[in-house]
Amino acid sequence: MQILLTLSVIVIALVAFVFEWLPADLTAISVTVTLILLKLVSPEEGISGFANNATITVMAMFILSAGITRTGVIQIVRDLLMKWGGKKASQQILVMGLIIGPISAFINNTAVVAIFLPIVEAWCKQRKISVSKLLIPLSFVTILGGMLTLIGTSTNILASGISKQLGYGEFSLFQFTGLGIITFIIGLIYLMIAAPRLLPERIPAKGNLMSENYELKDYVTELIILPSSSLVNQTLRQSKIQRKFDIDVLELIHNDTHFSQPLADKILSVGDVLLVRGSRDGLLQIKDERGVEILPDFKFGKLEQEMSETEEKVAEVLVLSNSRLIGSTLKDLRFRQRYNATVLAVRRGEELVRERLGKVAIRFGDLLLIQAPKESFIGLQTTRELLVLEERELETLRTDKAWVALGIVLGVILIAAFNILPILVSSLLGVILMVITGCLKPGEIYGAVRWDIIFLLAGLIPLGIAMENSGTTEWLAKFLVGLGGNFSGYWILTCFYIITSLMTEILSNNASVVLMIPVAAEVAKSLDLNPMAFIFAVTFAASNSFLTPIGYQTNTMVYAPGGYKFGDFVRIGIWLNLLFMIVTPLLIVLIYGL
Image 1 (cartoon, rainbow, N blue to C red):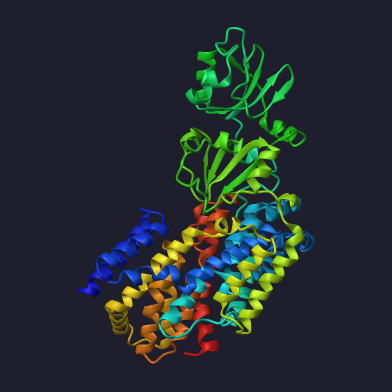
Image 2: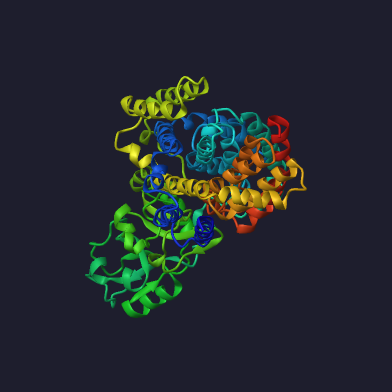
């Protein structure tokens, strides 16, 4: 009966993850609560995920990554990227891989992508290469680099914790580095050859004007207030035109003087010119009802160029996964008032949204085209919820602490590598030193943690406990052994790699590890094979997610900035997935034995 209940919870959880009825972290916590209510785990076992070594270590690594980010350590390598990149996409991918891949081995890869996205975009503009050629490779090299060490991804740390829970011990810091280096080299060579050929130029190489990339020609124009207009002597707030006609007033021109946000209390006069964003229907409606004239031959692209010489500018802003904006509309957020900035358009993967923006619910990975005063962008650069896709102003970083932060992280790595202290202890020690030395302020450590990942891990760990307690792991192992009893150990290992690889494309990689490692280890034990080989196969398969933009968070982060279509990931990712399905199990057998 307990096995049936556990399997039922697993199936329902899988469906909930796939259809995203709730955010992944809430789904995981719901699973824990269900397991406790069904008495498949005790309340103590249910909350044990919050005290698990893996959960605490992942939390500490997020904070250490923030220390590196806040002090601008990674900006130090920017010049190397610019200098050695060359003019060919293949050479750029090679240099990018050699620099960014090793960094991803020690710093959370979502943080690495967040830092390098603006740098790679600036690099592409300088070299006149489409960003579409390089952003998927950027994501993929951080994924490959994350498999070089234990601390490269939260998935590796979780897998290590599950291995310890099953009695096989934790992974050492460099336990699978040999395998990781080989797969990294293979993946980088593939990207150098395939990416320039398979990835289309979704965003033109010379498309420096963002208004052109967002096709704003018919959505941004100028209105002149006529003598008969009902707007005369009213403020914008009193006129309510922004709310009624679904338009945004970006600028007011009065007697050749330009006024930017905030504009709500500016009094309108005859002859004033309003620079507005809105739909064609909204603009025609305001023309008929409020007595304004649409000025012909207006070119926003020209204005965008002129803005670079004033205090206004247009830039792209990416919504990060831990943003509190997710799920809310721009109207609910009072985005204009909150950030003193106006959203002109939203790019969501291959979709462009330019109408009824106030009613658009924000999602992770959305790319917002924003017009605002320059000081507003400096403020946006310091928020943990949005990423301005341009290089950060150095004055917003604690560059004087860069070498201190780097020394702390290197110390954490060396202490763990030489087994002086467990990685859990050394990483927590590193967190304390980050605060004591001023690399991070005390209040920043809480904002640095990806709490959605922490709750996801804490919620999934009890599911593995329930599988062990109820005998579900053993039952599944016997069932799979019965199905594959005639296959060799190598082919069974390969099957686990393939199943996990496919599962991680539709679930989170952490969920795949929790579900598959106990079963894989039990199957290996039943067949007198090496359980660690199977654990490594599942760990690598769960992290090497290249097939879709939703399979891994770094893929989602580059989806909109690259202007990609869903099929672009399939086109380049399917061959890489197939390559690793063949190569990785074979390498595991050769290196670790079966």
